[in-house]
Image 1 (tube, rainbow, N blue to C red):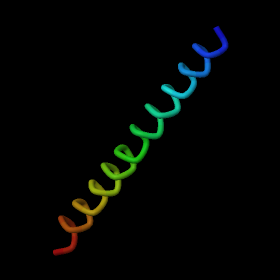
Image 2 (cartoon, helix red, strand yellow):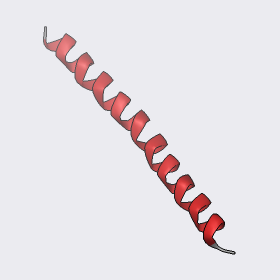
Image 3 (cartoon, rainbow, N blue to C red):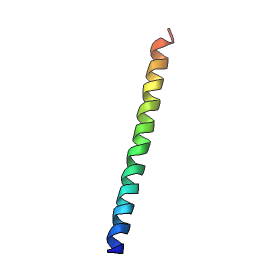
Image 4 (cartoon, rainbow, N blue to C red):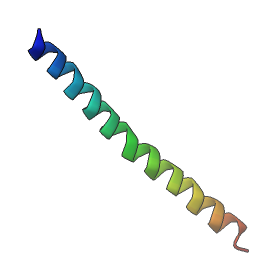
Amino acid sequence: MALLSKYIIALASITFVYKQPSYIITSLFKKEIIKEYFKD
């Protein structure tokens, strides 16, 4: 049972770590597009 909970925690943290950078990259990318758009 302890092994199962460790597996669930590991899976949750991996999912979080995997989703987090893509969210950050997306937001940075959007900011760059907005900057380029309003530069003229």
